[in-house]
Amino acid sequence: MRWAMSAVESCRIGVVGSGLGGFRVAADLRRLGHTGPLVVFGAETHPPYDRPPLSKQILLGDWTVDEARLADDAELEALSLDLRPGAVVRAVTPGRVHLASGSTEDFDVVVVATGAEARMPDFVPDHPLIHRLRTLDDAMRLRSALPAAESLVVVGGGFIGGEVAAAARVLGVDVTIVEAMPTLFHRALGAEAGEYCSELHRRHGVRVLSGSPVRGLSGADGGVTVTLEDGTHVTADLALVGLGASLNTGVLDGLGLDVVGGVLCDGSGAVEGLDGVYALGDVARWRDELTGLPTRREHWSTAGDQAAIVAHTILGLPVPDYLRQAPYFWSDQHGIKIQVIGRTEMARTGGWLEQDADSGSAVYGYHDGESLVAVATFGSPRLIGKYRPLVAEGMLSARSSAVS
Ligand SMILES: Cc1cc2nc3c(=O)[nH]c(=O)nc-3n(C[C@H](O)[C@H](O)[C@H](O)COP(=O)(O)OP(=O)(O)OC[C@H]3O[C@@H](n4cnc5c(N)ncnc54)[C@H](O)[C@@H]3O)c2cc1C
Image 1: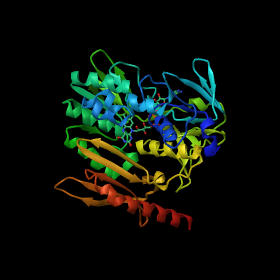
Image 2 (image 1 turned 180 degrees about the vertical axis):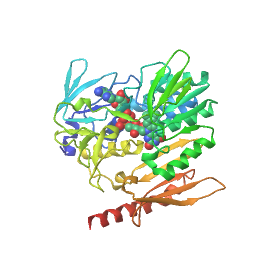
Image 3 (image 1 turned 135 degrees about the horizontal axis):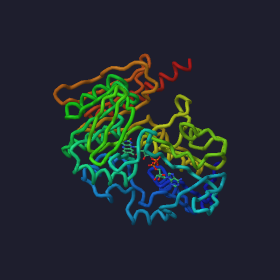
Image 4 (image 1 turned 45 degrees about the vertical axis):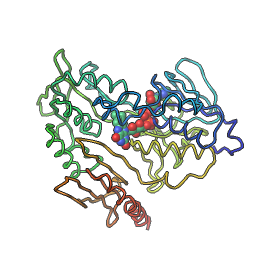
């Protein structure tokens, strides 16, 4: 559904989720001229905050909670949003939001930005020494537990697990990471760059047990025990489970929509099969404008770019090209900034493009034939600018050769 600018003031918009995507779409709508009612429902009771600092500055105690906010009180007031902290939405149907409290509210347009939760498989018991990290409350619990711990076992060698491991080392905690795949970050970076990251962690004193699927996890008074498939036990004072995300698609259940692996949307965020409803951020699977494939990315910049695209689309404004730039994410571990730009999923081969033994910085390239479709840079933040246009060009030429 597209609204002419003349109808903007009377257009009533409901946003479900007050995380990065939900907050940013509301702020962008205001910035682009929407002056009508704009309600943001958020299950959490905190004002909108950013998640990347949770596993970095907040965990280390370098930032206060307020520093992670997406907007201070004055900025929120200037946006004139009807922000509803603690308002859990049960369901969204065309033009209507159904709250868990039993009430309903009607809107011209609804945006679903419900994100995800930490995935906790059945073998993970509910125990105070077994932590997860998705919300500010999770981060504060882990932050208060870490200083008293001598050891931590991280179950799952993904980016959140890697960042928590790095923060725990700074706090002097003994850390073991157990990971089923052959290296850390294997799915995101592949074997070679993943092994580089495993080595980075080992150099900083982390015990990396890769190729080690977990069979079970238990907690007792004095600590936790992780049991590996081969029968080995890893014990520690605390555990952090970093086994990916479980998507909050439940508000769209029962409508016959394709929500497995993310709410299926067109290339501008309109939910396919549901008029007047958009979805964005971690919960959404947009048709990738380059590959045409429904693709979901749990990246900070994706949620922000998609929020801006949805705001432009709702208001009938042309979407600026820069909002459809190559996918990008970063991670900070052991003082090294890891940055990835492009579509690693398009790659068939990979190899090191640059390695500087003195500084330890490196760049890994992902290729489809001759085309450079993604790069990962390690400890060289400025190089991402050099590779951004090369990757943009490489992705286009890879797509052209796939089409021809
Ligand atoms: C610890 C951590 C560190 C990260 N670090 C990085 C990083 O370094 N680099 C990077 O690129 N990305 C990082 N990310 C990913 C990035 O933060 C996410 O991609 C981004 O937050 C997604 O925003 P979102 O709005 O889609 O979802 P979320 O931020 O999850 O927000 C969704 C909100 O919706 C609310 N909600 C859910 N269901 C309902 C409901 N039924 N009713 C009302 N409200 C509801 C939730 O409570 C939540 O507040 C990190 C994520 C985490 C968790």
